Length: 86
Image 1 (cartoon, helix red, strand yellow):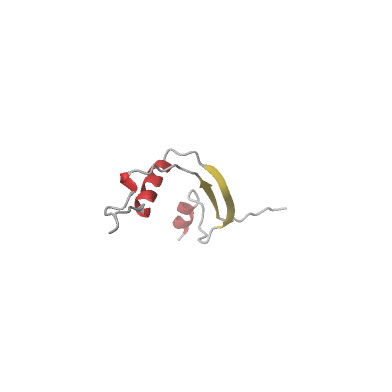
Image 2: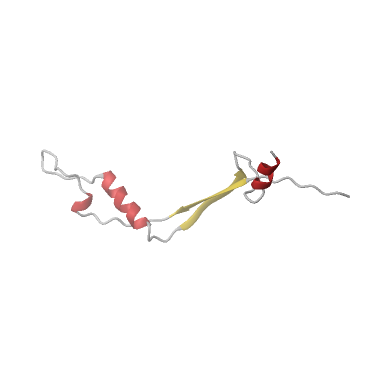
């Protein structure tokens, strides 16, 4: 009996998480204090430092899933053969 197969392109997405400790220094504070002299964290600066620290963080798996890829195409090693037939 003859056997056939169909290639289906899949996409696997893995989500990881890491926790980093951002030091509270002048580098992450708002540039100007409030009128009463109080200072506050600048969230954009905190997150920028956190992203830098993330490069060397210990990452742990949080979630993973496999879905059918929304764009179906022939595998890269097959595509030249299909193009030659056109």
